[in-house]
Amino acid sequence: MEYTPRLKKKYKNEVVNNLKANYKSVMQVPKLIKICLNQGIGSALSDKKQIEAAQQEMTLITGQHAMLTLSTKDISNFKLRKGMPVGVKVTLRGDRMYEFLDRLITSTLPRVRDFNGVSEKGFDGRGNYTMGIKEQIAFPEISIDKISKITGMDITFVTNTNSDEDAMILLKELGMPFKMNERSNKKVSENLNKNDEELVAESIEENKNDEFEKNKNIES
Image (cartoon, rainbow, N blue to C red; front, side, top):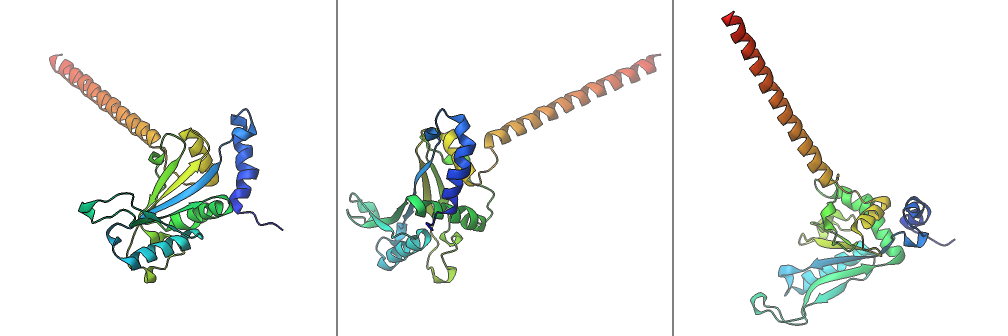
């Protein structure tokens, strides 16, 4: 029996059925094309061991061999020459992409310190979403005893749609835990402030009426 990742099955059987009513054709339903992971080496430019460690960690996390990112020009202030490694990257497609996303949602994000959802501000206006992981030890594949330096990485989700809203709906259907809509939060706070202002105005009006009644009784 052919193996199919859990999220791939979920996309075909559930997500497409849930979203196809919003489009003229089922072929217009947005889908995930690839996931790109990028990690900068930073101060470890001249440390070969650190570069190799970053490459090995990225390979462990994704299950695919990580490639070195090389500089394209010389920068004397950073002691950087053209062709020197400045980071590592991996591009995931197909089954490995769905497997990584499944592990990210179910295992990695719950291990992130003080995690309360991913931000909605990572969309680029063309249907792609980028989020950051500050510590690679959030991935269960990495042992904290074997690392020499805490580093982070960027994860980009590339979809076949140009709409940020469609891409967000797709990621939510796949299980991405977004924070409560920040625009909704803003509206809620505005409504609360408005209600507070109304209560204050009512209180002031009641005080005025009480003072008027007191003065009226005194005069009479």
